Length: 197
Image 1 (tube, one colour):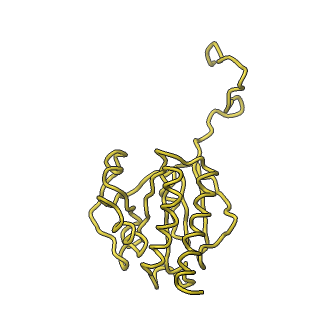
Image 2: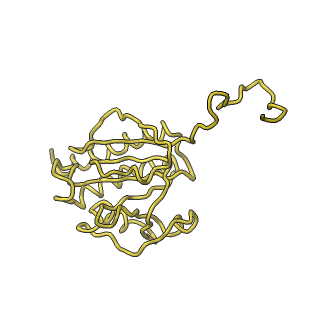
Image 3: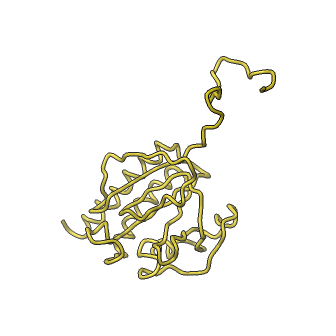
């Protein structure tokens, strides 16, 4: 496989997986997706050992194609050397009230994926944490800390991007109220009247 064929394959794998996640989670405008990526794992190497900007570029390209179709926002998780902070546009961070932190991700401290994403944004910044609506983890980067509860796993048609294992999830509101609770109003029924005991 040539380098160009590999790039097309990786971008396509990301596009397919993220499209499946977007459909399962009904992602659209105003929703936030966190992406955690080990470009080392995509190459079949141990996480944190062989970062590759070219792989990051291919993953970013595939993700942006899906983002353009569905309209959701993306945030990119850094590695543990930056405490898994996230790369985002400053305007989004301000609009959401996220805590901005001071660092610029580079391949050896932040990771190749976060460093590449940072370089693509108009006014990038890092934020400490988010509560994303959905996420995709490429290479076991542990994105769970940035998902809203309750996380619902989504099993992709292909469990791999390159040589990296893929895990995806979206969040749903917590179900509250116990055995008497109703979680969806029947379509033909009028709103309930009266008070709760």
